Image (cartoon, rainbow, N blue to C red; front, side, top):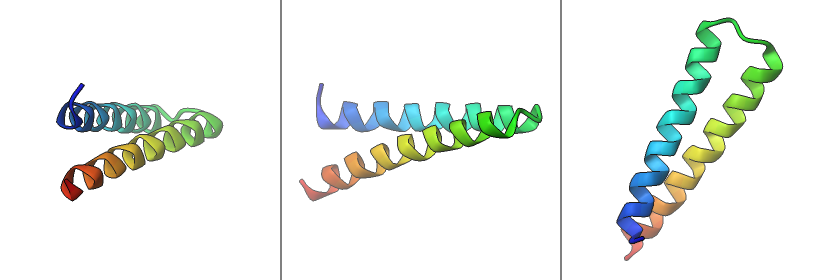
Length: 58
């Protein structure tokens, strides 16, 4: 997998994680579930940002 493909995949994963968080929020999910989904979304976004920064450095 190329760096560009890795960046695209990380972006997709971040978008999916954030969408899952928003859907749970809209459904008034349990606070622990919201916290878990928020953490997952933040980690996915951080992974994407890290890969994107690596790509910009090349």
